Length: 226
Ligand code: AP5
Image (cartoon, rainbow, N blue to C red):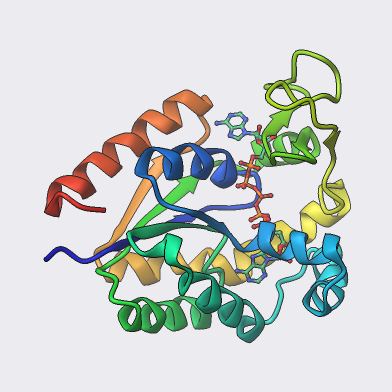
């Protein structure tokens, strides 16, 4: 019997992980697990977790590995992950990647499919400072490159579009530094495991989706199952 599989999207802040994860998770029929979204939700609800992680995220620093790993392991135990899942923004450090190997093994997952969304730094600032997100359904826009039809209003559900608190130029530079220091080395970690694929994410959203669609098809072809 084929094992369930996890997809992992790596890449710097603004690479398009969330934009693509929403599309590809829908295509695969698996949940999109964004650790950033989970923690922003905790902050918005004012939970104990939210009170701890809010100030850390606001500074553009990484939340502690243990907190993130506990949150992910609990989420993966939910029934909707029974056929697999797509991780966006996790793992982000070597200890998280090593921890995830164990979590996936204990959860009966096969080897993950890891995709690095590669974009040069000069595009990222424009993408991040121009990003607006629907406060209702989470749809992602960009005021420069992918604006809504009506200013500040979501095309899908009419929700108000908001700017993320960590999308200022100052915090973005901290986030990029954290990515270079802690997350970029994961490409070598997964390359050594033979599971890394790299996609040029500097091209249009649709072109990136097409490249990811090919990877998904090949992964499904391996055993006819995600
Ligand atoms: P998180 O929410 O994960 O943010 P991130 O990794 O910084 O990534 P972003 O969501 O900013 O970018 P994205 O790649 O998803 O791009 P998007 O698709 O939105 O993390 C936030 C914080 O939470 C962290 O700083 C940390 O504090 C904490 N955290 C989260 N996970 C953690 C973990 N595992 N461990 C520790 N701490 C953790 O696109 C961006 C913009 O670009 C949009 O406007 C979009 O429209 C546009 N765009 C997308 N693709 C294209 C394209 N191809 N062409 C043109 N524009 C495009």
